[in-house]
Image (tube, rainbow, N blue to C red):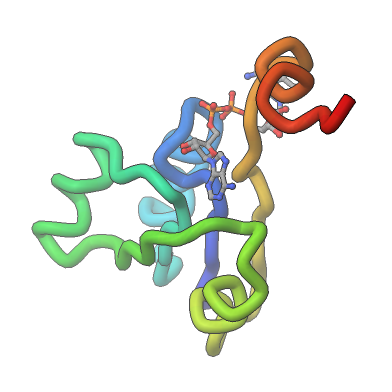
Length: 89
Ligand SMILES: NC(=O)c1ccc[n+]([C@@H]2O[C@H](COP(=O)([O-])OP(=O)(O)OC[C@H]3O[C@@H](n4cnc5c(N)ncnc54)[C@H](O)[C@@H]3O)[C@@H](O)[C@H]2O)c1
């Protein structure tokens, strides 16, 4: 199955990607950051990588094209950074 993992460069996502690949899935990572681990897998053609932001509907639509399953793990961890960066108050 073709599976998309948002946040696939992250801590949980990269482990999930590894497992999905081992189980024979076609995996595409959608993340705003390309980790060294995912870069290696993408360079070997083991996974696809789509750089983008989950807050952009057009980028999400493109990344999800043809996917049978999506794991959504792309997010900013921790409330302090989120409040500091995004709270309008
Ligand atoms: N790590 C934990 O112990 C834990 C526990 C419970 C729940 N979670 C949840 O699991 C999810 C993943 O956690 P993690 O530990 O792998 O975090 P992480 O920070 O290691 O990975 C998050 C990934 O999301 C990407 N990302 C962030 N904002 C993005 C955006 N706007 N568009 C595209 N990509 C974006 C980052 O680049 C990063 O690669 C989060 O929702 C987190 O709240 C984590």
